[in-house]
Amino acid sequence: MSTPPRIWTRTLCIIHALVVSGLWYVIFMLDKDIVKVRTWVALGILWLVWIFSVSFPGKARRLRWLAVLALGMVILFPTLSTFYSFAAWGIGGFAP
Image (tube, rainbow, N blue to C red):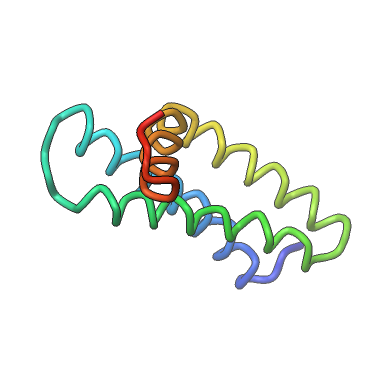
């Protein structure tokens, strides 16, 4: 059985993905400027930190983390093209 901190970290990973996707929907689909796009891109990049947290727990827990990360990627899937465009534009200075 997982310890409560591990449950919280998996829950926070999913909540983080939901927040990034929710903000994407509000900013780009509803055209509401509730946060700056750069802030949204930074929040999306921070979600990638969860991938590194997979390497810390043991093998049995790592499989659970991979399931959580897969669910997070499914949640983030609609945002990937927008995220890629703005990240490439912000980092490389060009619009793909």
